[in-house]
Image (cartoon, rainbow, N blue to C red; front, side):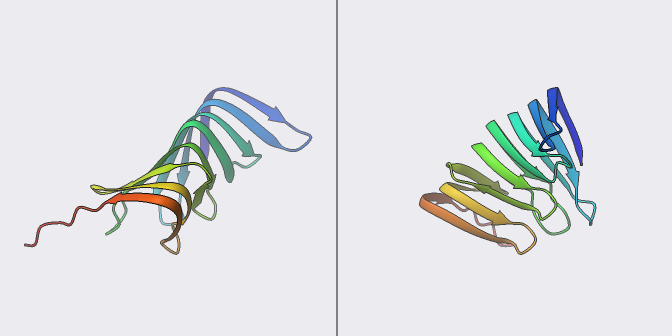
Length: 130
């Protein structure tokens, strides 16, 4: 995990880090890259758990046959070591040209499962047959 920001504050009493204007790069065991950005973040000491606040965005780049997946919200809670993202606030989810707007989200990349809180609005674009 690589963490960058305009300003970072470390609190040794509970080993947390506050970061202003944050960018986080996390590489999975398979070499896949996840990039997270936000106006502010609160992370544990090893940045394996990060709460992103204000214009939060998490992008898991495409790998193999899996298209890139992107999450946008005012709040995203990313668990980088277990490759999960969740939010109790509305989230815009994009994969390929499909979009989902959900009231809340729990997403697990490793199991490729998601739990959405409603209301939900979706647009799925089906690729043309060859």
